[in-house]
Length: 231
Image (cartoon, rainbow, N blue to C red):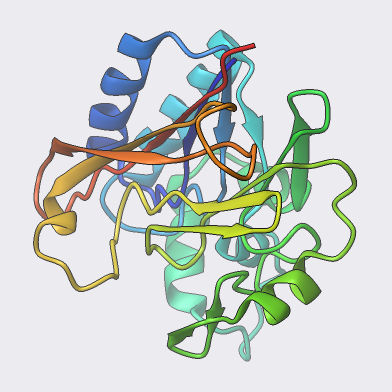
């Protein structure tokens, strides 16, 4: 089974187009959008249209990100990032904010073997793999994961930093970001990343991960992950 994963589009239709073009070449069995779909100024209306078209065409599974939650807030004088949110509400179709804010915090697929979330399975705001600006220790990551049943893979976004971690039998992957990469690497700031996974090639019996770098536009940062499981 192939699972294509992308997230943190942040309204950047131009970067998203590059990611989609590459994903479609691999003909995945399932698609997952890790949230933070629209909060950005490149072309949020265009990014919304493209993501809705993808959902209609491929049945993309969606989770909500923290900025998606912001778009569902009632705007008051005390609302953080009020100016940006007001502008977004003006350029996006009516009801868009309520839609993305109402998405689940996580989805389960591959017969329960895979969980996808923006931050953690129960929070769009909590960073699963970060502790401040440093990588979180395994014990803290386990605590944030909570009960994940029989899941062998956890896919997240939020931090905009690519990362792969094996904790026991569970593989945790941060897929990076379609837009606004924040890992400080000039190479990653102009690439599209792909992850292929499949059981039987890891000592743990999990879903081993391999990253592949693809060229992309600097600052657009098209980054996507493709998970592959051979059954």
